Length: 191
Length: 191
Picture 1 (cartoon, one colour):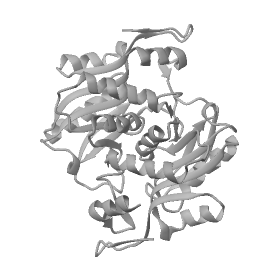
Picture 2 (tube, chains in turn purple, yellow; picture 1 turned 30 degrees about the vertical axis):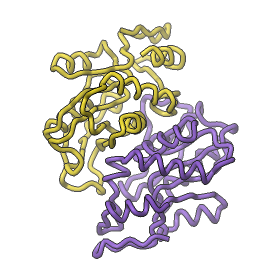
Picture 3 (spheres, chains in turn purple, red; picture 1 turned 135 degrees about the vertical axis):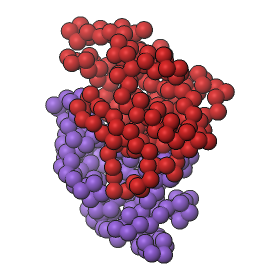
Picture 4 (tube, each protein chain N blue to C red; picture 1 turned 90 degrees about the vertical axis):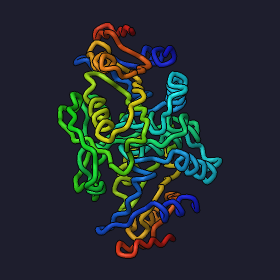
């Protein structure tokens, strides 16, 4: 998506350690008009699919998923990390490793809100190795729900998570796929 | 706000230990059309105020804040809990206690995105003791930003956090204020 790639080139910062900072418009401060344009791109790409629910994972997926919920006109469900005392015992759970935060988390969705009637569009802001996404897919499979597609804002293509999911048959719609980036020059190459 | 109170009566569940579960429409699954109506109420209530930024705190405030960002047509900033390796060293920080999760967190906002020119509307899904809100206000004060108002979806009025802020002169616009609730009967009384 040209608009997002331009914004990444303009405001994204490449840092040592394979970090692409997009905290000015995506995952700390959010440019909500950009997020709306991204959601409209996904809606066009998945036109005709019987999507009735959007699923994401806290925290930085929630903003883009909420706006996509408005655009798709469906409810939005966000998986929670680690067990909250406010969540019932009756949950789908998947163990997910975060390379960013260097911890394992239990990712949890209440069984009340996901079942075999659901046709789910899964959204997240980033995909690298795909660990979080695999957790969300596992939760959908546990519920018997159909994964209609996966929408990612920025995929780190060279880390392979997206292509592994495509090989498994999932439709992964990443709006920007970074093929390489250079912390010294700041250059970013898109697929 | 009548629409929200009705929804809380219909789908909210009062549990032992002072817990009001609204995970079916507010803080796990989100009814985004309800969230949009709530944001429109706030926009009407704060019409004429020079609000140029919305501030919230992860995780469950993000969805409602993102949708409010669209309605107000301003960027949305969400404070992060605990230090992420993807956040710069240059941050405003406040220590916040969570009674829900029984932990202290450092709440962090990058100095790049908040300064003395900002007129901030602070949003959160719940207010009880007001600990999280005090942290966000402290961050705004540290930045020299003006807090134009505070929008809360559900305030637990009997816990006093909202009234303490009103006494300090803040405009706290809670769309539903719970005065009492009874886990045995399930009854909820609004202010």
